[in-house]
Amino acid sequence: MRLIFLSSASVPKSADIGGKRLISLAPDAWVKWVTQSPDVVSLDFLDAEFQWVSRQNDVLIRAYSPTLGHFLIPNELQLRFSARMPLRLRAYAALAQEKFDLPVYPVLINILPPPESVLIPSRFESEFLGLHARQDFRVINLWQVPANLVFEQSLSTLLPFVPVLQGGDQVPVIQQALLQLRQDQAISELEPLLAFFASFVLESDLVRQVMRWDMAVLQESPWYQEIEQKGVAKGELSLVLRLLSRRVGELSPDTQAQIRSLALPQVEALGEALLDFSSLQDLHRWLQTQV
Image 1 (cartoon, helix red, strand yellow):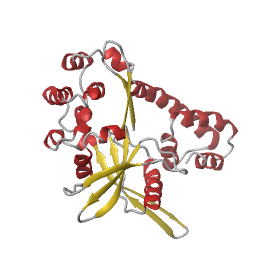
Image 2 (cartoon, helix red, strand yellow):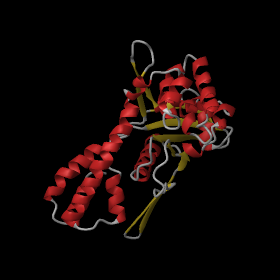
Image 3 (cartoon, helix red, strand yellow):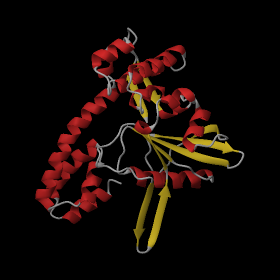
Image 4 (tube, rainbow, N blue to C red):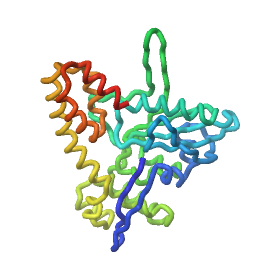
């Protein structure tokens, strides 16, 4: 996950904070937390680029435990859950295991909750001609994580996310996270990210009072813009779904879910491609090219 935002300095400058940078703030505390194993330590970050899988939001850690030995922890951080994620995690975990010849413990971290109708699975499963494939992964939904754990377990990585954690939407809790960020120069650059997530749970005026921060800077942040774009994308997606129903007939819930998981450029491409569709098979063939 790449978090790109503007600093609150008088002369704005860009800061590119990726998931690797965040986890590197407290890697040992992180691997202990995601595995729930007190004897696990982080050894190093590995190259997470694979030729056949495009990955943008992951952090691959080589970890060690006296009881478990060496193993891999692929960390996938998502602003919101995508229906395509189980399949991508299955492919990513297999490639990581093949490349480094180590056991794999995949972890999916979802930052913001999806609509109530969306269920988040903890495994990928498929069956074809009697052959079964399965990949389990651990799911961590940040809105279910108690905010006090961040302070009790020194999880510096999660300080910017405190406002969206369980019980983290209270002003004193956000102020505590802000104080810890400002006390450590190495992580003070994450203050705008804390302001961004505070804006989900507090009114803008209150965020300004708590952070003493210019919200105009926040609105220029690509994080803020991403949320705005999602509103535009939602309208465009609804239009594409209606046009598809008229063009090729009623869409199954699975097909609709697959379409809803497409990125905005893919939705736009589908809006153009559907003009050439004459059946559901045309749509399914097009979706297969987007995997």
